[in-house]
Image (tube, rainbow, N blue to C red; front, side, top):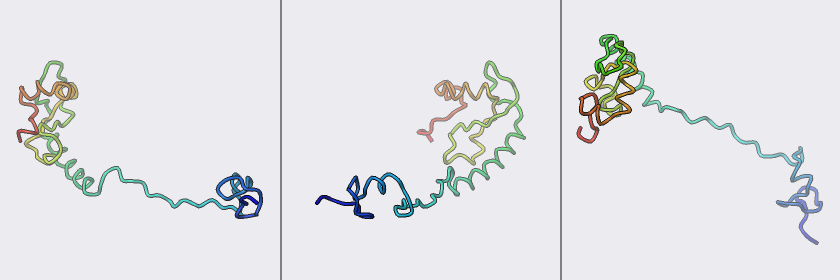
Length: 128
């Protein structure tokens, strides 16, 4: 005699079960209930603390510098964004690397990094 269902001893279908117990879950064949999974945090607690400190410093800097510091062609004059000339990593809280820029100038600097380094609006992270 061949293999039989481990639950009802009926004709074997797959994984030691008959067609009824394999395909249709029931009280006789409860499926394992998965544990509730905690979602992965988008930002670590350490980075969240750093972000809170950065927002305070950035807001103070932007209040003190209301005019775009780049003044490139197409400039809208009012500073709305904070550019990090040395990058955000270890220099995130260093105000000496901040530049208050309008959106148009910030986009230009991000799209033309070589020209921004020549002008002095960005610094190479390798030279630091």
